Every structure is written in C-alpha cells, then in structure tokens.
Length: 379
Image (cartoon, rainbow, N blue to C red; front, top):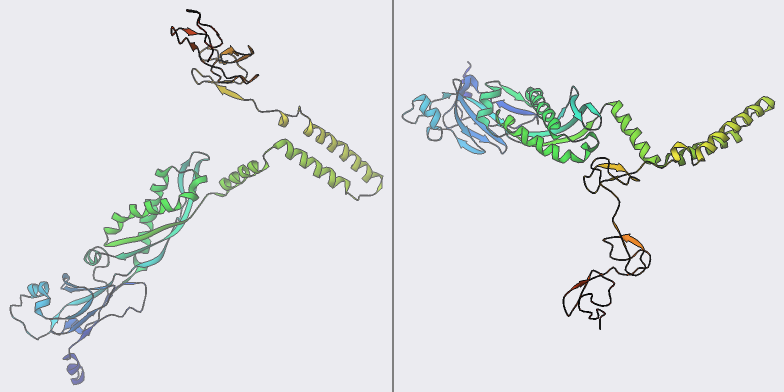
C-alpha cells in the first residue's frame, strides 16, 4: 500500500447510500478490508435502514438519521468484540443499507388458466392480471430469510417467487368465492381486498408488508365469451316472432332491389318472392310456433306445487285450487269470498252485523235482528 493510500485510510469515513436505482432492495457499502474507523459518520436517509453484520452475525440496526459510530451507540457489536473500554482503532464490520420505501406497480398475471366451476357455464378456465405493491417492514427478517450476505439485491431477485405466491392465493380465493362468471366484473374491489388480506401472512414471513393488490382484469375462454354474446343477443332480440317478420321483410326488399336481367333472372326473382312470401305468411301466422303464448303455470295455494294455470285441482295434494266464491250482498254476483268490494257493482262487502240491542250476529245484508227483531239500519 502506498503512502497516499495509507494516509487516506486514516481519515474519518462517511458511510451513506444515495439510491440511484429505484428497484434496489439491498446495497452493501464498500469498505476497504471491511475496516471502519471508530468515530466514522453513518448517514441513514428516510426510507432506509442500515444493518451492521460482524463475521456473519447481525449486530446493530440504525434507523434514519446521522450516527457517529463509537462503542456507546453500538452495544451489540461492542459486546461481540468484548470492548471494555472506548478506543479509536478501526474495527471490521459489513454495512448493509436496506430500502424500506414502497415498490409500486409490480405486476402479477396467470401463466396458466385457473380451473373453476361456474353455475352457468360449468367448468371454465379463468385468466387474470393486475398489480401489487410492497415494502420491507422487518429488515432483520428480510436479511435472514432472503438476501443473506449478497452485496446487492433488487426486486427482480424476488419477483418470481412473490408472483407465484399471489397466483396461488388468488386461485384459491376465486374458487372459494363462487361468484358467477357473468358477475365477476362487479366484484373486482372485493376480490382485490380479500386477496390482499390473504397475502399478508405470506409476505410477512419474508419481512415484507404488502401495501396494495389490485385485480385489473379477469378474462374467460373464447368459447365462453361467445356463449355470453349469444345470450346477450337473445335478450336484445326479445320477441322472436317480430324478429322473424323483420328478417322476412328485409329479405323481400333485397329481392325487389335485385337488378338481375333476363327471363332467368325474373324467374329466380319470382321464385324467391313466392318462397319468401310463404316464409312471411308463416312468420306472421298466429299459429306459428313462435306466436304461440308460452304455457303458464301457477302454484298450489296449499302445497306450493307447480301446476298448470288452468288446473282446478292440485296434482300433488288433490285439493281445489279455485278461489272460494260468495254472492255479493247487493247484486248476488259471485265474487271471491274475501273480497272487500264487488267487482260488478262496486258495493263494499261488509262483515256480519251485530245487533246493538242483543249482540246477536246477523247476515251482512240483514235489516232486522233475527233474535230480537230490532232494526239494524244505522240511524
């Protein structure tokens, strides 16, 4: 070693790290022969933690701030070195700076489709992607479990493992949620929050804290999307008879606009017109299958079994399903027994009349008490 280098090594060192790379998790400060001068200045910036390692063993941990290294503020290292008295001679230790800021916009995505059972389409294959963010919350755990004594460590070194953890947890979450494929889009926020909570203990085992997780998109196989498109089309079409009539009218218009010349063209046009006319007539016929009203059903008021709308007795319990009728007190028309007004004359159907003299119950339309003969008309 030259005289200049020897002289340079005797200066008080300033140990600090200015992070030039946004993806660096750990940086080992280069110290000549791992030799640090007693009284050296250690500067730890916000979103950083400095850890001193002596002969492979974690010693002291320093948070943000300016630290002067001497025996009083390095209790663990002092104990390991058995320093009973303060001194100014150098000591050997490795200094690691750990980045504790959030690492955002980390991407996750399914490399293989997730198999799940859907109530509408049966077994389907689901693909998805999104983003997440995390930070180092326990630097000592992170050092012990992941980076060890590497001179540097970045997000690419752990990215693959974290993605696999997320995909495994989300696949289990999607299957347990039992949300139909048609309703997945309205549950992205809930799935994202539940997915984050599911990842908390997994990230904590490596000294990480997952700060956010988002599901950006969940896509279905092409054949399932085509089936969904067909179902949507059927809903838009609505009345099939009207749709067929519209299609027939459009076809006749196209034939009428055909400019094909000659007798052959005229014959083809006439034949097509006759055929389309028959199609049009069939489509507009009230006997056409699409024009027939759908068979309606009703429930038995006694056992709730589904029966035909015109049935008078239930095929399950055998009881009558017709509404019990009673004569109107004014016009004697047959109306439901519990009706409050007559549907023919509009008269209110009063309950039984109680005699004010003897309290005898009389028919609703009685004018005199059948027991004492007292008039029942209101005075």
